[in-house]
Length: 195
Image (tube, rainbow, N blue to C red; front, top):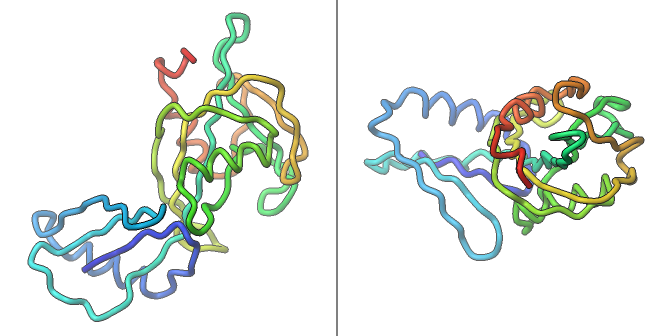
């Protein structure tokens, strides 16, 4: 069996359930995974059966999201995290991480920096991958969420997708409406305090 994760959003439909059911029925020793980077800038993660039997169906596709866990640090305030108050549904008027879907032929880091600039007006420097999570969406099905730690300097200003933009100390930040955002914020660690 082969499952591909594409950065171009496409509905998974029943293929996702079939792939999960088949993959979960296989013992772990029969599965192996590898990261590949084909031509262009699209990454795919493939899961193969080690004995390579053909499944005879099209691999499911997933929506992929890039979220900017944007930090700023100063001696007076300490570590602060940037959140945007969403201008559009879902969760309009709620505070969340800047981010959005990765576009076709766009690298994950480029998508993350693009979303950050569109929503906050800031340019940042990617420091590391914080985590990769899966979240179910009533609108899109399974969404893969990648959180990248980004450091910035300067004053943010709200873009077209944001009503407000503000730095919060992690302990004082409003609870994001997305489970994946809460989990990414919880993954911040001591080395993230230095810029």
